Amino acid sequence: MKETVELNDTKFEILPILSKRYSPRVFSEIPIAEPELRSLFEAGRWAASSYNRQPWRIVWGIKGSKTYDRIFDCLSEFNQSWAINAPVLLLNAYKTTTEDGKENFHALHDLGLFMGNVTAQAQHMGIALHQMAGVDYKKAKQEFKFPDEYHIATAVAAGYYGGNVNDLPEDLRDEENPENRTRMMQREFTFNGDYMNEPGLSSSNQETITTDN
Ligand SMILES: Cc1cc2nc3c(=O)[nH]c(=O)nc-3n(C[C@H](O)[C@H](O)[C@H](O)COP(=O)(O)O)c2cc1C
Image 1 (cartoon, rainbow, N blue to C red):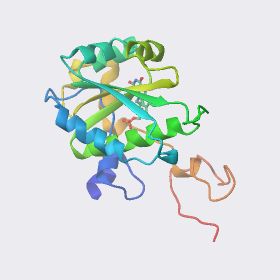
Image 2 (image 1 turned 90 degrees about the vertical axis):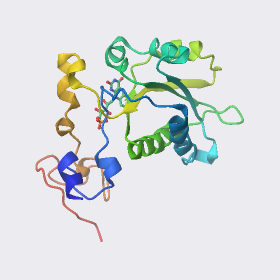
Image 3 (image 1 turned 180 degrees about the vertical axis):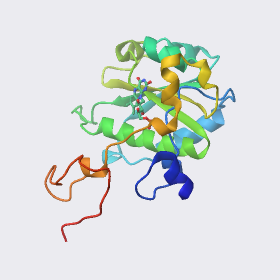
Image 4 (image 1 turned 120 degrees about the vertical axis):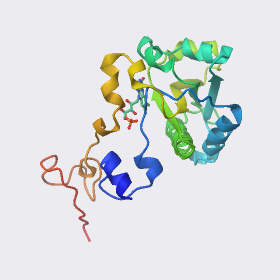
């Protein structure tokens, strides 16, 4: 566990697959083949979802394929500048409606749970994921022929951890250092009572354990 604490400055003990995860912009040249991808999607398949609606839909492409190029063409210019290194690209979509055509308010939440499972499985396999909001969702929806009630939420670049940071544009290299990652303190987002009930918010770098009972 010592190793875990050092890497991501975790304040309480958590699983190494969580503390060691980060979103790189460089990847090893080791390819990812379909069976590995199937393991990732299988992990997502068993995620919880509201009413078990499983609203997630994933488009996947392996580098060198036409689908990969079509996903790549939907990415923002910034994301294209580094995602070109990724052996796999995904598009994450979700069905916005319920069986009776009403809005499924929890669909995006459920896609997030799906990707959480995929991320944990990937980390266990040594595969890094980098989620991307920078995707032309209208273009992607049209390109991959999604019906009206679907929305494209994000794209993902995936590959084994590795690769050469110097392949990146200079301004992005610093962000590859996991030590530069920061997080809010728990007391900024967890409340054992009313919203923002904790005194001294942001005034100290210490986490304390306090309960109201
Ligand atoms: C929904 C979502 C959208 C994101 N969009 C982008 C993006 O378009 N481009 C990018 O370079 N990083 C993107 N990121 C990566 C975040 O910047 C990154 O997860 C965050 O800084 C925390 O770093 P970490 O994942 O290494 O812990 C996105 C992450 C998420 C979850």
